[in-house]
Length: 110
Image (cartoon, rainbow, N blue to C red):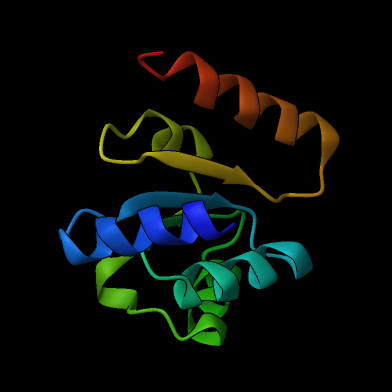
């Protein structure tokens, strides 16, 4: 973890944090959002959820800057967004989660 923490610190100092999108803002998604917001070098740039109110509540609970974070019901859109470096799937729904994971991996340039 020390190497990862050091690299994230370097990215933060350089003004190049890792842009993270979160899909799902239930119990697990809220916990992930809180951790993302508290971690140097990571920037929560989008939250996708079936209901916008739940996504907005997760942002508020995490203390995120809502004006800098996109909120949507379209999980595929955050997977396809070029500025997103990492997609975290936290829906808890196996079928939907698998579709999100497939979309995220299909949208990468790896």
